Image 1 (tube, rainbow, N blue to C red):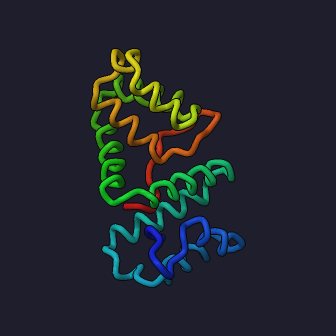
Image 2 (cartoon, one colour):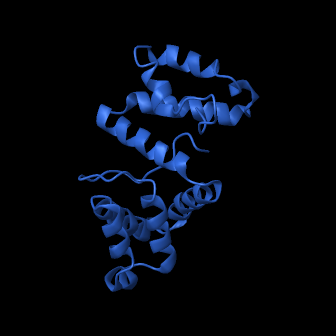
Length: 160
């Protein structure tokens, strides 16, 4: 369940092929994936935890998470690192700035990608957000599928 390489399935395919399994059976299947046991123990546990987290989501939330993961997988390694860094930078902001950035994220994610960029570059956003905050927003939005309703800040699920 890492980024797909030749001969490996993408996460949505992997899950679709195992959708009739119980969460425990899915976990067992994950643990049998080639290379899983070669990963560090903490990374194995993160993957298992993320699988369980996906099982707890509504079908709509799950689909959004899978689409976000697909978008993340398509990025170059450098861009993937920028998205991870944006998520970390958000976590290091003061609570009031986190709230402002999250609110802007929820508004921007409802817009088509071209419109998102236009707003991020606007004078209005420049006066409300620092260059770093706008970069964080842009990086997080780069993997966010176009949605017409609010939700949470994206976290790449299986790209780490």
